[in-house]
Image 1: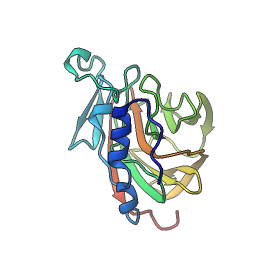
Image 2: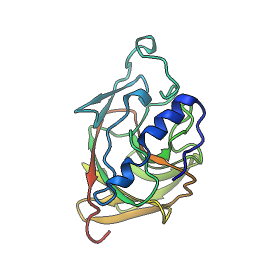
Image 3: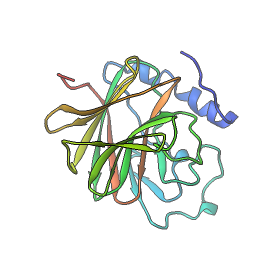
Image 4: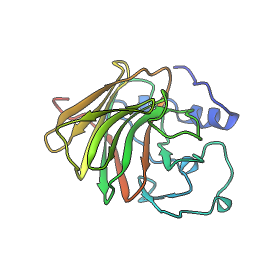
Length: 207
């Protein structure tokens, strides 16, 4: 297991603190909460830091503690546990959101960036009633899934795959080939409504 390159000592400590936790619970999959220190000022966490909601105004940046881990330009929040191996599955309940992104990102992704716009994150995005994959700011359409109340994500680290799962059919809708170079964390972005995460789940049979 190798520690990732970090842009600051704070990020390095943040990543190192969480490495290994996912591997220890790999049989059930990664168990995580959302990391408030990474959340953009327009986002608020709830339900024991497992959910995130968007506020158009959000908190005044001056009311937030300054740290290198917080996203500064985009409404993004990361999970608090890194994945370095294994197969992991988690679900996301979508509440009143018409524009959001779910996926994974390198632990040291730039806090001035947004997930999906560079090569350090791999996401599925929903906007304008359509799903797309998104990598390096390039989109590819996904068919066969509408606006669900809940979606699943299957991360296969060694196989370098991230899949979007239709939980109603327990079936992979789309698989995104990745290029992991180090630890990654579940990542989320939204511009309205709420997302509620469910982690620590076993990979469903058949996936």
